[in-house]
Length: 288
Image (cartoon, rainbow, N blue to C red; front, side, top):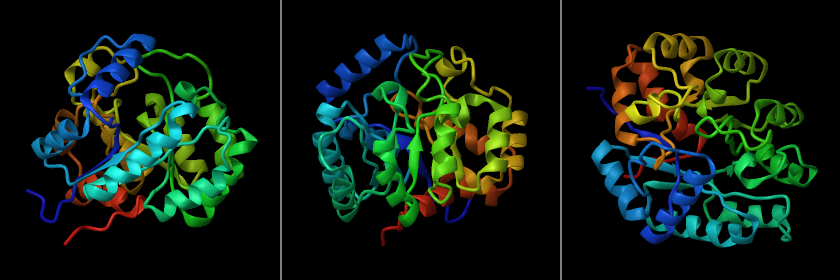
């Protein structure tokens, strides 16, 4: 038992209803040849049920979609998070959006947005597109994180836009902007250690790579199956730069949390990884 433990899943996706969730999951799994079973659907009812089951206090919604639907999706994310205080909103953009993205972002921030989520590979744009520089500048000034999908999806690589090499120029140009590289930089230990050394603004989330979900562990090549490797990387990077995330409904909140709690690291480091770091990074204030 760890006293005062607040658990934050720093990487989940959610959908407006069960029908939409099923359609998106089916399409995404088909495109990326995902053959394992999703542990849930992550419509709001399902997501909150999974959070209760896993004793997770807060979940960061890392929603994204195509340019055509981004405005509606962002508005819905902000709206649902304003009602459900356990849900923390990130919003997304695309360089092909016709709207003034900087003005839109400032409005989103007033409405509670805690950062930006970009999935360059799935959304189909290079992260170093100059049209995004205004957004990055705002994040650098306000210390709001940009969460980048980093690496493959279920061993599929449709383009190079989510490769580390595509994201590094952004990190170099905006050194004051907090950046979260999901999936432990595609599970590449060498890259994790180099990025951690070279960029003070870099954080890393555990989703899919430090998995406790057996179906992912048996199919995902970059996943780290040995706890000793996980402990060594956490120690070298620094526990204060690791964010627990599941990528629900593709990863499993419940199984990932069990694995994390069983990893042999100190209670202070575990508290930081499971919630403390995300509380600071995403400006989450404990209710009550």
